[in-house]
Length: 306
Image (cartoon, rainbow, N blue to C red; front, top):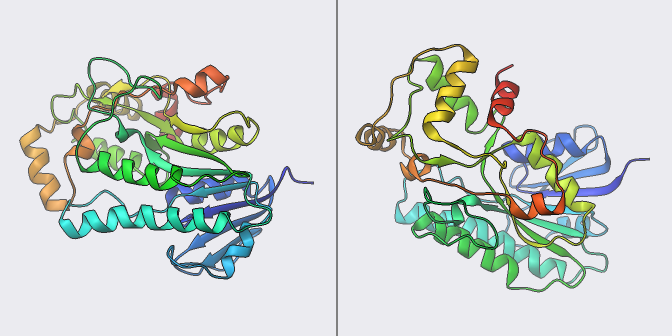
């Protein structure tokens, strides 16, 4: 008999959703992905089509769910035009409002609802780490996105569904996400520091994200905002040095701020994603006794390369 009955991943057809589906398929009877596009069932992973705006047949699948994880959201890896800004916010807020409304109607709603959020919610920090209790809000568009997202999540009280907003750092994984792109820079000799290299990188390995979600299922006293970042953030210069060293590339050309600005314009993104100093600590997880599988970045880099 498997440990869990049902896991539902809203917007779970992307990178992190795939990681979570693989994690839970061996320990849950069913893994259900809510996606805008259909995909044939694989093992006990089933995809249902939804648009994130309207109720449909998928509503019934939320009954008797152990974990609902909402991962919906247009990628922020784009230029912040007015159109993109509206889509980025709407793609997060609208599904969250919809799920709140649906959960209130269910006879047996999800036991735990985790909503994605981001460690970028905190201010630019090089002076001291930011945690859930003493962290200070930042400013700028990416922070406003997080505020709107979390406000939509917490504004409705769901008496029978515990809520956690998971403020995630930069997720490292071997096959997708940020790390393969950093490794490509190293491979082509471009893996030097970015900007002045002094900005902090709050990262986390994908295995810890999956493990944290399961750990939260077994710790019903935890709710509200929780930082999901490894306990040992590093500066960008050190991050890139370690990737080069572990990969075996002794040198990498640095990318000064002006060059990053040109490159970001050419590939349609924003330099903020690279240059903002995120010094975020997972205080609540550590206080509650969570043990990180990969607490140090060297371990995560090796797992992503080998």
